[in-house]
Image 1 (tube, rainbow over the protein chains, first blue to last red):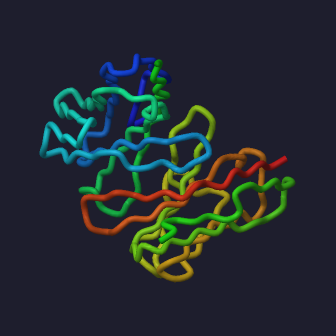
Image 2: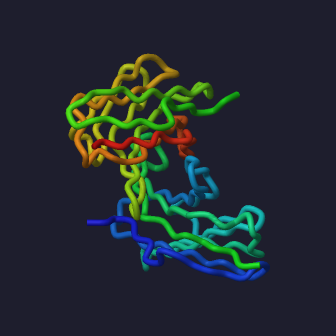
Amino acid sequence: DQQVKQNSPSLSVQEGRISILNCDYTNSMFDYFLWYKKYPAEGPTFLISISSIKDKNEDGRFTVFLNKSAKHLSLHIVPSQPGDSAVYFCAASTSGGGADGLTFGKGTHLIIQP
Amino acid sequence: NAGVTQTPKFQVLKTGQSMTLQCAQDMNHNSMYWYRQDPGMGLRLIYYSASEGTTDKGEVPNGYNVSRLNKREFSLRLESAAPPQTSVYFCASSENDAPIEQYFGPGTRLTVT
């Protein structure tokens, strides 16, 4: 029973355009959400997060939107750059962002085409 | 400041062998975690430690033991390795206080034949 779902295994976007990565969750106890970026042979690196009390958080080219009623969040990258090509993981926490560990989706492989 | 370090980077074991994966962090974080990632899967939590001297099971703890040796170090032990434990293992650390942001090591790629 997957509690965090990323239904698109891969996504191809042209350089300079917007990349939109989607994530759905089933556990209504999740109250903090994060996006991680992972290059091959490296560990995941934190990208951006959002608390359940907000519906949007922005950091430079990256914006995360949260729709609690739909149990859906999305990551927007504008404009997309070649270095954004990576696997992106959506993750969620039930502990107010505390120390109990994260539940991850399977990831979406983003490919930025020149 | 090295962040989170893991040793070894690669390991091949035969079924039934044992080994310990080492993890250390130099960020003075209270919490540490072990995850595994299988092909086409997200990361799944094996064990975590919210503070020195405490450990808790995660989603997939069977076949593993952990030791929080001190604040810096958190090791993962496979007592009798089995082929389903072939995976990439990631260690992470974080502060206890919200909002949480976990910092990951580079991973250990383990193959059990």
